[in-house]
Length: 166
Image (cartoon, rainbow, N blue to C red):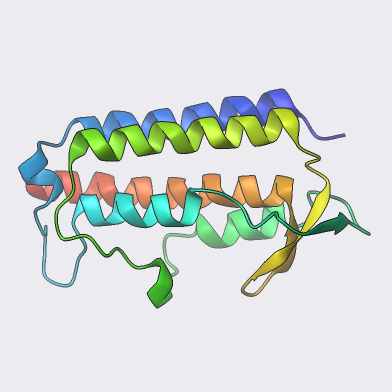
C-alpha cells in the first residue's frame, strides 16, 4: 500500500525548500547568470515549473506491476549529481526575465496541484500519455515521486547559483 500521507509531506517539504531558497534571491539575482554556460536561478525555476506543472495522466490503465517499482532507480539517477543531463528543447526555459513573486506563486500552485493529485487520484494507475526516457511508462505515484527528485536536483543547482550571485 502506498503511503499517501508521507507523499503529501514530501511534496510540501520539497516545494517549501525550493520556495524558501528562491525567496532569498532579489529579482536582479534571480536573473543573473552566475557563470558562463549556466542558466539563471529564474531559468532553472522555470525549467522546474515546465517539468513539474502536472503529470501525463489523461490516458491511464491499470498497472501490471507494483506502483512504485521505478521510484528507487529514478531517484538514484536524478539524485546522482555526478550525472549531467541534456535538457530536451521543449523543457528549456523560454523567458529572459523572471519575477520572484510570479515564480513563487506558480511553484505554490504546482505544490497544490500535486497535493490534489495525491488526495483525489488513483496513484497506482499507469499513465500512458508519455514515457520517461530510460524508464518507460510510470504510475501516477512514480510521476509524483519523479517531480520531487527532479525538483530536489534542481534545488541543489539553485543553491549553487545563489552562492555565486550573493
